[in-house]
Picture 1 (spheres, rainbow, N blue to C red):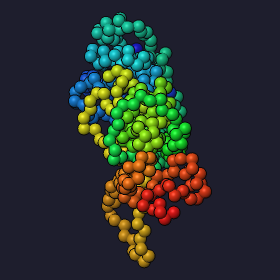
Picture 2 (picture 1 turned 90 degrees about the vertical axis):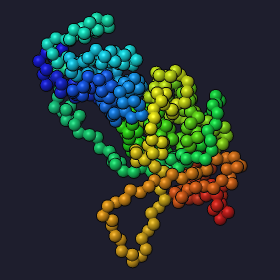
Picture 3 (picture 1 turned 60 degrees about the vertical axis):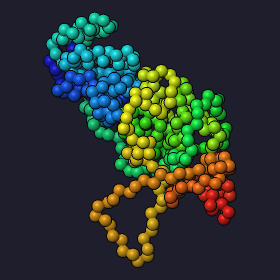
Picture 4 (picture 1 turned 90 degrees about the horizontal axis):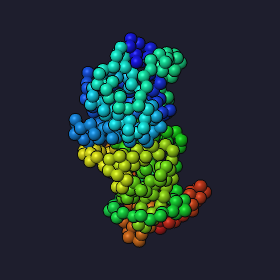
Length: 395
């Protein structure tokens, strides 16, 4: 209870907002009483872009389900809602449903001398405590407020990031049937996907968390980034293929490339994959494709288009060097370069793939992915069975 609507308590609640430490503070959008608007406020507090595309504009169900999936996948344990005295019955029931789904501790701050009658009536049905705001929301320290306003530096912000793992994303083969094999680890298959530097991992994780509210879309691109898998392999992943703690994921290909294998999931990608699996479990049960939307969204971008929205792409062809003596002229308006997505068969092992041409369009070939090729690359040369097939006879 904040009967005098003290600005000190509001500032303290906003200063306590720290999703990475399990505390979420939601400041509702003024002038609206729609339940979907409150769900958007929760997603915005989680750092997701709103409004949510792909569903009917006034349908609140998908938005609340996606918010619940993100809360369960991240370490959110406390949700503080300001301006609770303006809640309407349907918005409060939606909040209680979110609490039942996630187990989050709900803290309502009522900036009024008394609660509304319906709120008192609804609270009688749930276990709750009433306290004064001065006891739970003391005055925030100036240093805390300063830390909240100063954003952490991002060395790679607003820059295109070239990920060699995305070189093998596009594929020519069709998706295979469901598989329930016990696939070995990728290391045991002698497969080593490209490793991202820590600063790149941090930036990629930040972009995927803030680029979309759809968990399956962010999880699919994250999996491609740390496995170097193709879209065909990604489409084989089911909810059962994700480890119980989200630390491993199994991809299948029935021997087209290196065979079915289990990849370790890096720490930065685990919340994304857990959110995708939790959304399906909340809405459609425990089975189904991991990287498809169980809520039936429409009009969302393709995986390559989403990657370009995040400014992630495979290494592009080298720019032509200007001729000697040629005068450089800088264009007034910088034209946007179209991203080239190659079709690379480096990981294929079947005989029919040997005759398939690599449609690299000048893009660099992906880095070595086996122990032999990695060791020989360290020595400065590659074996004759790796690289562009049309150039192998020259090695």
